[in-house]
Length: 196
Image (cartoon, rainbow, N blue to C red; front, side):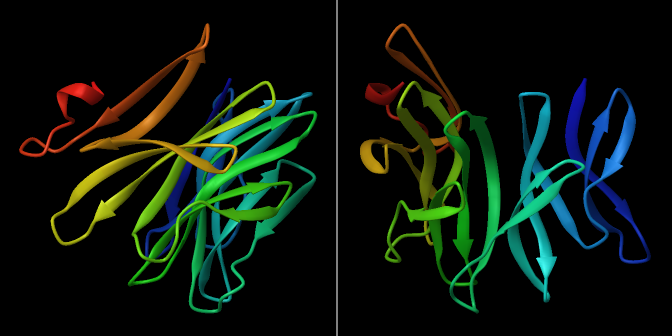
């Protein structure tokens, strides 16, 4: 059994990305870091998260015991964070964000090649993904930072295909050509009935 998460240590109680295998912890980094998702493929364990490189959060894919792959931001003022991961024989798929104090862009990486899913006019996040044969679905949201409201987003192969007012999606599954999404909304700004 594998569990992914973080341990906290040091005088500053810094988080350290960690995987537990059958109760035994495996630290993925000595730097401040977080592990957000795990995928096992061909007996190899992949973990997505971030660690601080040169005092900046940088999205990372760890292949436990073998290598780590940073997913750098091309802009010095943007940090990157990986939120979910999936691996198959076609490669490594990762969702995440590029952000600073004023903007956040939903991101998708396949084999370390970055694809922005949103533009800089919105504050967006990509949270999770689902691979269905040759199609890649990414779930995320726009966040209205003034009204603190959500607009759920579904991208298929990099193209926005659906918006869900009031929804902050967290999980997606596809069975028998039907899409199932788990999401939450705020009490006074709930998910509209047509989108439930």
